[in-house]
Image (cartoon, rainbow, N blue to C red):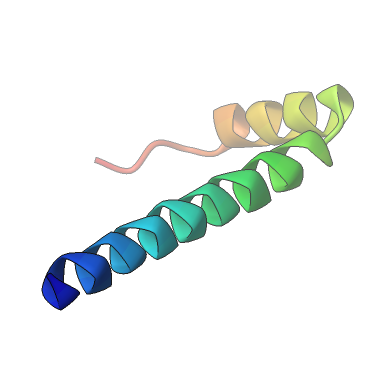
Length: 51
């Protein structure tokens, strides 16, 4: 029974860590203004394509 408890705690820790990573990514995306996104897209479009 002890093994199941360890696996359960590990599972909960994994879910919490995944949630923290997702939240961090969303905060980073939220910090970018629409004007910055537009400028980045225009820069990427202006770059010559390499193929």
